[in-house]
Image 1 (cartoon, rainbow, N blue to C red):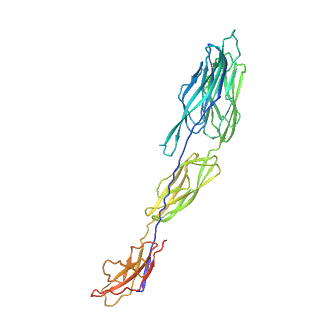
Image 2: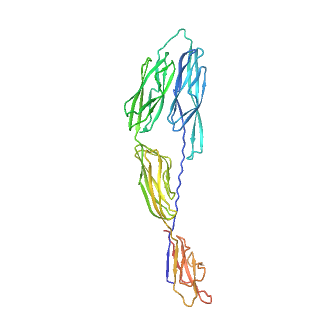
Image 3: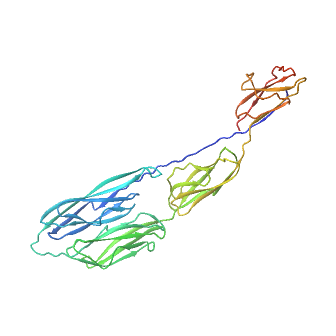
Length: 440
C-alpha cells in the first residue's frame, strides 16, 4: 500500500445571557417638622400649611392622617394622595381651641411605596412608613378685641429646581399664609424672568384672592428650561398686607439634551461557518447629558450582544464597550438591527450583517496497490497503534480505494488492509498507516 489522503473541518457554539435587577424605594419629607399655631382666640380657627415632598425616584401614596390633640384637625385636601417622584403638595392643619390654655398634639402621616425586585415587575413589596409632625398652640379668651395687621408669609421662601434636560419639565408647590390678625387680599402675582428665557411659569392662583387670618392658599411653579445653563427669576406677590410686596426667589439649571452614539454604525462579520461564532467589538458614547440604558434588542437571534448589564448609566463624555457575536444556524446571508432603549434624545441603532457557510463532512481517503489472485479487500481501523482493529467496510471491496467518512476532529486513527482470495482465505494485515484529524 502506497497512497493515503484525508480532509476535515469542525464547529463550536457560543451562547451568551443577560440579567438585571432593579429596586425602587420612596421617602416622604414633611416641612415644617413642627407647627406652632401660637395663641388663637377661642371660638375661632387658624390653619397652617404642611408641604409634603416625595424625594425619591418612585411614586409614594399618603393614605392616612392620624390627628391627636384637642382642637387640632386636618383641613384638606382629602386623602389618599399620590406623589410622583420629586413632587410636593400642601395640606392644611387647623387649630380651633374651645377653651383657654396651652394645647399640644400631633399629626401622623401614613405613606407607602412599592418596591420592584426584578425586571419582569412580578416581585413587588409594599413598604409603609409613618411621619409625625408635632402640633402646639394655645387658646385665649381676650378681655378686649385686639386687631393685628395681616402679614403674608411664603413657604418655601425660595424655590430651587433640580438640573433638567432642555425640553423637560418639573413642578414644585408652595403656599402663601396670612399669619396676621386681619384679612389680606392678594391682588397680583408676577414671575420676573432673569435668565434662560421664560423658563418658569406660575399656576394655581386665582386672583384677586382674600385670605382670612391664618388662612393659606397653595400654588405651583413649573420649570421648563429652554436652553442649557443656569436659570433664575422671582415671583412678586402684591397685596394689602403689612408687607405689600413679597418676593420668592426661583432658580434652576438646564442641561443639554443627551445623545447616544454607536461606533461603528454597522458591523459586517463576513463569512462564518455554520455553528461556529465570530465576535466584533463596538462602543457606546454619551454626550450632552448622562444617558440611562434600559435594554437592547436584536431583530435576528443569530446575532447577540454581551458586555453590558442593564440598566446602566453612561456619564456625558464617557464611553462603554460591548461585544457583538454572530453564530449562523444556516448557510446564506443574515441581517439584523441592534436597537438600544435609553433616555437619550436620539435613537441609537447599529446594522449587523454576516454570511453563514455550510460545514463540510470529515473524511479520510485510502488507496493501496492491487494484489494478485485476490477477489477483494477488507479495511480495518483502530484507535491506537498495532491494534486492536475493527473492520469498517460492510462488504468485501473489490477496488483498491476506500473513503472513511465516520471520523471525528481531533482524533488519531490507524488503518490496515487485508486481501481475500477465491477460497475465502484472508491475508495478514498490511503495513499500518496513521492519520491525525486536526481541530481547525
